[in-house]
Length: 135
Figure 1 (cartoon, rainbow, N blue to C red):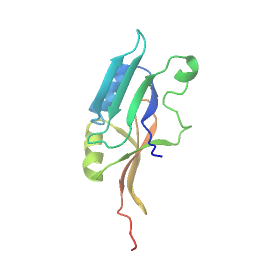
Figure 2: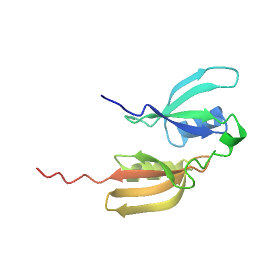
Figure 3: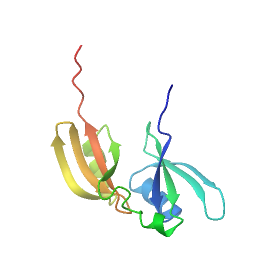
Figure 4: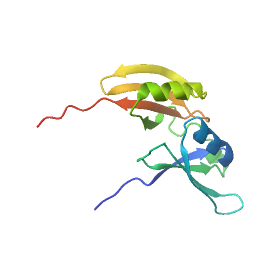
């Protein structure tokens, strides 16, 4: 059996503002934007060169869903954006106005800094260290 995560839903306030932020601040690609009804769209965005699952930008439709915007994980880091060049991406993201709430640090697993998306969800920008492989 083979399985994989297809998409990750991110509850957003509005489709257009979310698309604008992800495609400008993070340089994500708009993969799909299909109207399903007068109020619902299927919107997928993905990191540049992304091999990872797409984010499904899901517009909050109820008061309960609206209460989750920006806090889908109770204040914990929600998503992990891996990079092959931490300094390049960190500096470019800062220049595009991305808000970092924890400055870069060197950890045993790699270089990491925490930023917030336009709604306040926390993300790690992370460049992993190569793993030691034993024969």
